[in-house]
Amino acid sequence: MNRFLKTGLIGLGGISRVHLDALKNLESARVIAVCDIDTQKLEKARLETGAKAYTDWKELVNDPDVEIVHVLTPHYLHAPMSIYALRQGKHVLCEKPMASELSDALSMIEEADRSAATLNVIFQNRYNASTVALKHIIESGEAGAFKGARASICWHRTAPYYTESGWRGAWRTEGGGVLINQSIHTLDLLSYLGGPIKRVKGSVSTDLLAGAIEVEDNAHAVFEYENGAVGVLHATNDYAFSAPIMLEMAFENGVWQLWAEKLFKLEDGVPKLVTSGESAAHLGEKSYWGASHKTEIEKVYDCILSGKPFEIDGRSAFPALALVKGIYESSASGRWVELTKV
Ligand SMILES: NC(=O)c1ccc[n+]([C@@H]2O[C@H](COP(=O)([O-])OP(=O)(O)OC[C@H]3O[C@@H](n4cnc5c(N)ncnc54)[C@H](O)[C@@H]3O)[C@@H](O)[C@H]2O)c1
Image (cartoon, rainbow, N blue to C red; front, side, top):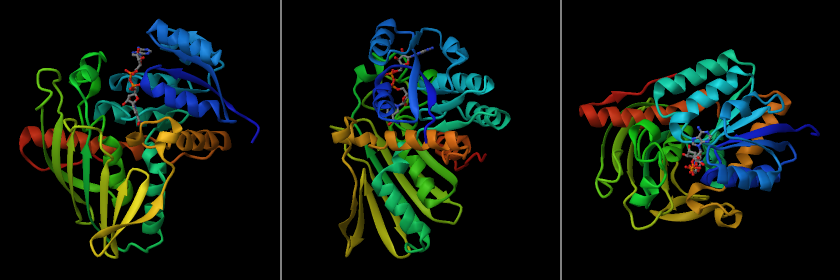
């Protein structure tokens, strides 16, 4: 494939490093515009990429040369930026979560339906070697019927991580805490691998980080799949370090555990290695993020250039956000909540 897309990046904070590194090595991409309201970050990115620099994100979107916009900004800006870009006919690759509110996510999907351009969302852990291998085992029929899941997300976030960011820790700008930010990848895998989730009962609290944040630093939930299987989830940002996430998926013919890029199968109750993926540490990513941004970005570009739909569009990314918001609603009401469908 000779053609490439001309890319604009909005938001040049932590995750932009991962996108820029991935894009640098892609034949199908040329970074031609960068944007941030922080002029120091903007100048650094301009010098690194040689791209046009904008402080006003609408000007970047309206740059006639820009064909695809990566939305790498705080959560509450994902919807307005993505919707505006789609309206101008620009493809969008939006970081997770697709939006901070369900109503915004639905508006993004509606806009994408109206637009000739496409809405694509980052959930890079779908492309980890462990996820790809287990998805194959499920689709081949080897696993048999799905029985249940458990997920444990124990990470470490301190008060300065929130207070110094200007947007994390507040409901309006982050849209939640450990669930919407750190856990949403795992919530996505729970339905990507297990199937649609019907209802949830859960509870969230602000504990160790009380005083620094208004969102939750702890959460637990029980949820029921449409096929009757049951899942359980525990998430915290109060652990001593950011441990690898553990996701266990139980099927009729076996129990598999995903530990980041590694997939294990329980044999007599003991995990035996099935697949060992590339370690994220080699790629300069924090290992608990997963290593697969480059894989996902490459697939998005290949799909756009060849006119094929990419699998993680707005509809595909929506269920993870619906589960997050279902847990918040259940925590407030003390009741089971039926998940919003799209
Ligand atoms: N996929 C992953 O594993 C992963 C990992 C980390 C972060 N993320 C996501 O990436 C997004 C950004 O996170 P981050 O850690 O880079 O945050 P960050 O705070 O480091 O960076 C956000 C950047 O957006 C800029 N910004 C804010 N308002 C803007 C505006 N109006 N116009 C232009 N720029 C603006 C800020 O100045 C900042 O540089 C979030 O959605 C986050 O959840 C994803």
